[in-house]
Amino acid sequence: RKEVEQDPGPFNVPEGATVAFNCTYSNSASQSFFWYRQDCRKEPKLLMSVYSSGNEDGRFTAQLNRASQYISLLIRDSKLSDSATYLCVVNKGNTPLVFGKGTRLSVIA
Amino acid sequence: NAGVTQTPKFQVLKTGQSMTLQCAQDMNHEYMSWYRQDPGMGLRLIHYSVGAGITDQGEVPNGYNVSRSTTEDFPLRLLSAAPSQTSVYFCASSRRSTGWAFFGQGTRLTVV
Image (cartoon, rainbow over all chains, first blue to last red; front, side, top):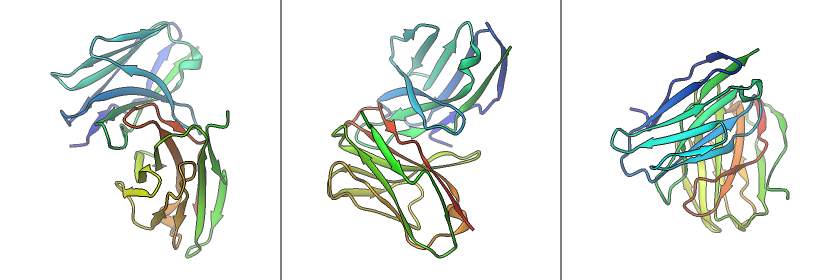
């Protein structure tokens, strides 16, 4: 089983839609969790951290469920500029980050 | 702020050639890593370093060497290039034990 698993998509949604991505991780020792965004032919960039209590940043909401070992990202009111690949990332502490393969989102006008 | 600087951005090598991909960061980050990204494979860790003088292997280290003589620099050496090393290479840096990694712009390498 892969350490971090994501549905690769693509998710094709119309502008204004709400879309959600899930990610599962296998190592219960994982300590911190993140969503990164990667635009086509660009480097990944941190989108937001994921906390047990959940966190929100504008139209983006991230949730963590430690018992079920999954992480979610919700995007409300999708914009064309949200089209990208979203990477789920897990950190076990003093080890390098582990990246999921990413979920591709296309927002269509 | 330069952040993480990778050079070159593009490179074509012939099979058997060697080269060094450069990576430098100006944020005084302890952690630096090299990843390769291939279609359908996601980001795979090649080598990483938790501080100057300390390096370790990642998931796909074969065919690559690294060294970390300073906090700022973390070069990746391809010893004898093979077509299987055709990929996009990313260098990243972060503070100890955080997930806030900063990436360079990537190097697109083609081995023919």
